[in-house]
Length: 318
Image 1 (cartoon, rainbow, N blue to C red):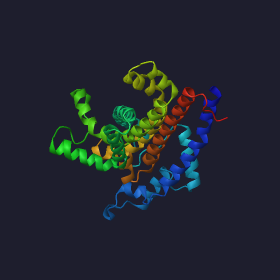
Image 2: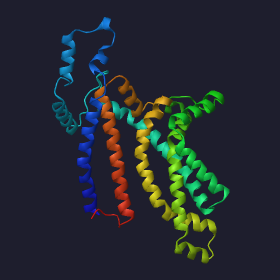
Image 3: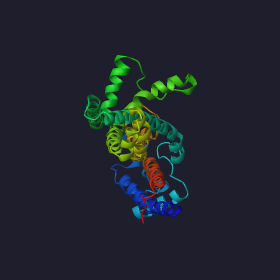
Image 4: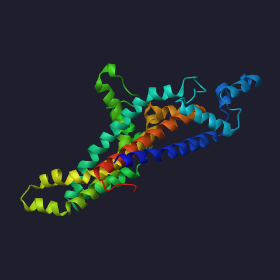
């Protein structure tokens, strides 16, 4: 087990190097000069060329791309993601200040997804070909098909503008009580968790169907155990292994998917920071947010792989 974990960790090093190169290359082919954006596009307020050149030297933009990449890697090894061109704030500090809000939204979306997917998938499998089964399959197809932005606008229209039950945007304040925070969290969490709930419902249903056909389930029924005990106690426990694996992987996608949801709902997380940085051509912030998201995604997958190998010893690279 220890050898597997060490090998899995070593495999992430070239992966992270490749990701750092891709992030650097993609960010640097974005059209537009960040220094010009920082100083303003109004020709009447155009700064003198000496100031522009000084700023380009200050941020290393006057160097060839290869040199810029090596400097970028050197800063990464020191834990330095650079400073924002717009606000001069250290990028790592800006990301860490907003990361709790993004994690809060992702965890809430995960709770929403699991609360919907597991009961729906189990009931659909236990009552295959019934109305409940057809409803679960149709609901999962609908959930996968709906884009996040469309669902977000629909929820805002119904629950915020028409019914006025929930706030339109913002994060709420703990000083106003946990109820205020939860009210602000409901719509973004449902928006972000719906597509994940759809995927997990389909997987839970198929996994449960496979488990319910096993011999030990038939033996449990032959002993006279009740249907609920057989399904929920003996069947669900084994069916959850692939579901939890996919849930862990999908948690990484939730972090990336939060970019759109945070922007629509005015959620002060890392995703909204990244979108603002893209509009302002703030290259260090774009690079930093993408790298942090990628690192979190890789770490989540690493933890999932290790847990999967622990739960199923047959999983090995050798």
